[in-house]
Image 1 (tube, one colour):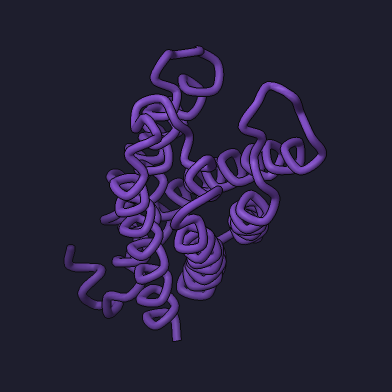
Image 2 (cartoon, one colour):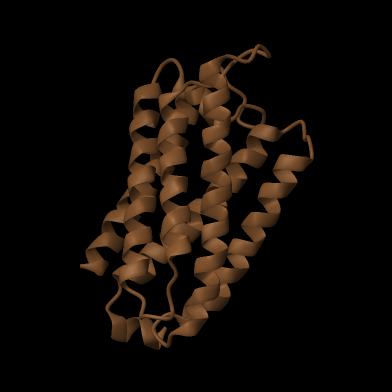
Length: 201
Protein backbone atom coordinates (compact mmCIF):
# COMPACT_ATOMS: atom_id res chain seq x y z
CA UNK A 1 0.00 0.00 0.00
CA UNK A 2 2.74 2.49 0.93
CA UNK A 3 4.41 2.38 -2.53
CA UNK A 4 1.13 3.49 -4.09
CA UNK A 5 0.84 6.31 -1.57
CA UNK A 6 4.33 7.38 -2.61
CA UNK A 7 3.48 7.27 -6.31
CA UNK A 8 0.29 9.25 -5.87
CA UNK A 9 2.07 11.80 -3.71
CA UNK A 10 4.82 12.15 -6.31
CA UNK A 11 2.24 12.77 -9.03
CA UNK A 12 0.59 15.47 -6.93
CA UNK A 13 3.90 17.23 -6.28
CA UNK A 14 4.90 17.10 -9.95
CA UNK A 15 1.51 18.41 -11.04
CA UNK A 16 1.82 21.36 -8.67
CA UNK A 17 5.32 22.14 -9.95
CA UNK A 18 4.33 21.97 -13.62
CA UNK A 19 1.09 23.92 -13.19
CA UNK A 20 2.83 26.63 -11.16
CA UNK A 21 5.61 26.98 -13.72
CA UNK A 22 3.27 27.09 -16.73
CA UNK A 23 0.87 29.61 -15.17
CA UNK A 24 3.76 32.00 -14.54
CA UNK A 25 4.75 31.85 -18.21
CA UNK A 26 1.12 32.52 -19.17
CA UNK A 27 0.94 35.62 -16.97
CA UNK A 28 3.62 38.01 -18.31
CA UNK A 29 1.74 40.87 -16.59
CA UNK A 30 3.21 39.65 -13.31
CA UNK A 31 6.87 39.95 -12.35
CA UNK A 32 8.46 36.57 -11.65
CA UNK A 33 10.89 38.11 -9.17
CA UNK A 34 8.43 40.29 -7.29
CA UNK A 35 5.01 38.60 -7.47
CA UNK A 36 4.06 35.95 -4.89
CA UNK A 37 2.58 32.73 -6.21
CA UNK A 38 -0.75 33.46 -4.50
CA UNK A 39 -1.43 36.29 -6.96
CA UNK A 40 -1.54 33.77 -9.80
CA UNK A 41 -4.57 32.16 -8.17
CA UNK A 42 -6.55 35.22 -9.26
CA UNK A 43 -7.57 36.03 -12.80
CA UNK A 44 -6.76 34.09 -15.99
CA UNK A 45 -5.55 30.49 -15.54
CA UNK A 46 -6.16 30.74 -11.78
CA UNK A 47 -8.35 27.65 -11.93
CA UNK A 48 -5.41 25.50 -13.00
CA UNK A 49 -3.38 26.74 -10.05
CA UNK A 50 -6.28 26.13 -7.69
CA UNK A 51 -6.37 22.50 -8.80
CA UNK A 52 -2.60 22.32 -8.32
CA UNK A 53 -2.88 23.60 -4.74
CA UNK A 54 -5.49 20.95 -3.95
CA UNK A 55 -3.32 18.29 -5.58
CA UNK A 56 -0.36 19.39 -3.45
CA UNK A 57 -2.49 19.30 -0.30
CA UNK A 58 -3.55 15.74 -1.13
CA UNK A 59 0.04 14.79 -1.94
CA UNK A 60 1.31 16.02 1.45
CA UNK A 61 -1.41 14.10 3.28
CA UNK A 62 -0.75 10.93 1.27
CA UNK A 63 2.99 11.18 1.82
CA UNK A 64 2.54 11.73 5.54
CA UNK A 65 0.35 8.64 5.77
CA UNK A 66 2.76 6.59 3.67
CA UNK A 67 5.81 7.60 5.70
CA UNK A 68 3.99 6.81 8.95
CA UNK A 69 2.77 3.41 7.76
CA UNK A 70 6.05 2.63 6.01
CA UNK A 71 8.23 3.08 9.09
CA UNK A 72 8.75 0.58 11.87
CA UNK A 73 7.45 1.14 15.39
CA UNK A 74 9.89 3.38 17.24
CA UNK A 75 11.07 4.96 13.99
CA UNK A 76 7.98 7.08 13.45
CA UNK A 77 6.04 9.69 15.34
CA UNK A 78 2.50 10.96 15.21
CA UNK A 79 3.90 14.49 15.34
CA UNK A 80 4.97 14.37 11.70
CA UNK A 81 1.62 12.93 10.66
CA UNK A 82 -0.16 15.76 12.48
CA UNK A 83 2.15 18.50 11.20
CA UNK A 84 2.02 17.31 7.59
CA UNK A 85 -1.78 17.11 7.83
CA UNK A 86 -1.96 20.66 9.18
CA UNK A 87 0.38 21.76 6.41
CA UNK A 88 -1.83 20.10 3.80
CA UNK A 89 -4.90 21.81 5.24
CA UNK A 90 -3.05 25.12 5.15
CA UNK A 91 -2.25 24.66 1.46
CA UNK A 92 -5.89 23.97 0.62
CA UNK A 93 -7.22 26.90 2.67
CA UNK A 94 -4.64 29.20 1.07
CA UNK A 95 -6.19 28.45 -2.30
CA UNK A 96 -9.78 28.79 -1.08
CA UNK A 97 -9.39 32.28 0.41
CA UNK A 98 -7.92 34.82 -2.03
CA UNK A 99 -5.00 37.02 -1.13
CA UNK A 100 -5.28 40.79 -0.95
CA UNK A 101 -3.74 42.58 -3.92
CA UNK A 102 -3.67 45.91 -2.09
CA UNK A 103 -2.40 47.09 1.29
CA UNK A 104 -5.94 46.95 2.75
CA UNK A 105 -6.40 43.74 4.77
CA UNK A 106 -9.68 41.89 4.31
CA UNK A 107 -11.00 38.87 6.20
CA UNK A 108 -10.28 36.62 3.22
CA UNK A 109 -6.78 38.04 3.01
CA UNK A 110 -6.15 37.52 6.72
CA UNK A 111 -7.28 33.89 6.50
CA UNK A 112 -5.09 33.44 3.41
CA UNK A 113 -2.02 34.76 5.23
CA UNK A 114 -2.67 32.64 8.33
CA UNK A 115 -3.20 29.50 6.24
CA UNK A 116 -0.01 30.16 4.26
CA UNK A 117 1.98 30.53 7.50
CA UNK A 118 0.52 27.24 8.75
CA UNK A 119 1.33 25.54 5.44
CA UNK A 120 4.94 26.73 5.34
CA UNK A 121 5.76 26.30 9.02
CA UNK A 122 4.02 22.99 9.72
CA UNK A 123 5.32 21.34 6.55
CA UNK A 124 8.87 22.59 7.14
CA UNK A 125 8.97 21.43 10.76
CA UNK A 126 7.49 18.07 9.75
CA UNK A 127 10.24 17.70 7.15
CA UNK A 128 12.90 18.28 9.82
CA UNK A 129 11.38 15.81 12.27
CA UNK A 130 10.75 13.17 9.62
CA UNK A 131 14.31 13.50 8.32
CA UNK A 132 15.64 13.01 11.86
CA UNK A 133 13.56 9.87 12.28
CA UNK A 134 14.97 8.41 9.05
CA UNK A 135 18.17 7.61 10.93
CA UNK A 136 16.37 5.19 13.26
CA UNK A 137 15.70 2.40 10.78
CA UNK A 138 17.91 0.54 8.29
CA UNK A 139 15.18 0.95 5.69
CA UNK A 140 15.40 4.75 5.73
CA UNK A 141 18.86 5.44 7.16
CA UNK A 142 20.55 5.83 3.73
CA UNK A 143 18.28 8.82 3.09
CA UNK A 144 18.81 10.50 6.45
CA UNK A 145 21.66 12.80 5.40
CA UNK A 146 20.24 14.16 2.11
CA UNK A 147 16.79 14.56 3.63
CA UNK A 148 18.10 16.35 6.73
CA UNK A 149 20.46 18.62 4.79
CA UNK A 150 17.70 19.67 2.41
CA UNK A 151 15.20 20.17 5.24
CA UNK A 152 17.64 22.32 7.23
CA UNK A 153 18.52 24.39 4.15
CA UNK A 154 14.85 24.93 3.33
CA UNK A 155 14.09 25.93 6.93
CA UNK A 156 16.90 28.49 6.85
CA UNK A 157 15.66 29.91 3.54
CA UNK A 158 12.12 30.07 4.93
CA UNK A 159 13.19 32.24 7.87
CA UNK A 160 15.47 34.28 5.62
CA UNK A 161 12.44 35.00 3.44
CA UNK A 162 10.14 35.66 6.41
CA UNK A 163 12.40 37.97 8.42
CA UNK A 164 14.35 39.88 5.76
CA UNK A 165 12.45 42.07 3.32
CA UNK A 166 13.99 41.62 -0.09
CA UNK A 167 12.80 43.50 -3.17
CA UNK A 168 12.51 40.11 -4.91
CA UNK A 169 10.15 38.61 -2.32
CA UNK A 170 8.27 36.70 -4.99
CA UNK A 171 11.45 34.90 -5.96
CA UNK A 172 12.33 34.10 -2.34
CA UNK A 173 8.85 32.68 -1.74
CA UNK A 174 9.08 30.55 -4.87
CA UNK A 175 12.56 29.33 -3.89
CA UNK A 176 11.19 28.23 -0.52
CA UNK A 177 8.31 26.43 -2.21
CA UNK A 178 10.69 24.78 -4.68
CA UNK A 179 12.85 23.42 -1.86
CA UNK A 180 9.77 22.03 -0.12
CA UNK A 181 8.63 20.40 -3.35
CA UNK A 182 12.07 18.87 -3.85
CA UNK A 183 12.02 17.31 -0.37
CA UNK A 184 8.48 16.02 -0.84
CA UNK A 185 9.33 14.58 -4.26
CA UNK A 186 12.42 12.80 -2.93
CA UNK A 187 10.53 11.37 0.04
CA UNK A 188 7.70 10.22 -2.23
CA UNK A 189 10.21 8.62 -4.61
CA UNK A 190 11.94 6.78 -1.76
CA UNK A 191 8.57 5.67 -0.40
CA UNK A 192 7.50 4.07 -3.67
CA UNK A 193 10.72 2.05 -4.01
CA UNK A 194 10.69 -1.62 -2.89
CA UNK A 195 12.04 -1.91 0.68
CA UNK A 196 15.07 -4.00 -0.35
CA UNK A 197 16.00 -1.44 -3.02
CA UNK A 198 15.69 1.36 -0.48
CA UNK A 199 18.23 -0.33 1.78
CA UNK A 200 20.74 -0.65 -1.06
CA UNK A 201 20.68 3.05 -2.05
